[in-house]
Length: 153
Image: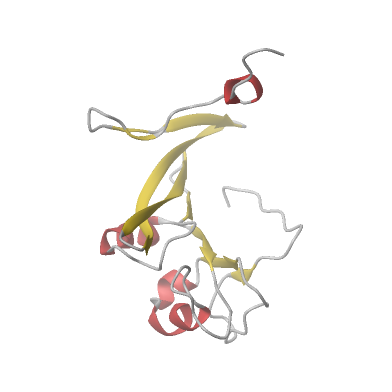
């Protein structure tokens, strides 16, 4: 097949900050409603002197129910992310459990000690070396392979 591109296999939709400064979102149908997908920019790490951005995703259903996937971002860095965490009904939260925090992902100790309790209760933790040990009733849950979730609640 000549001239194979990503468009050959996927229905590609451009989202995010555009050259003219606007931010493009994407809408898709789900049953009777629809989801609005908005990219959330944050800094991932600084490697040498290079900034390495990360983009999370906010998914808002037509009834206002919002799922946040901050992806590879440090918890609440920058502070502008606070409004996204507060607005979300469910958060899929990266959670490092290594004995020595790498500074690349939020470490479970930071999520336990530094995260607001109202936000903790919305979080499903994932991306861990070993399942995190957490106090009872602190987080919404810990994701495991094969888990299935249906939204909106």
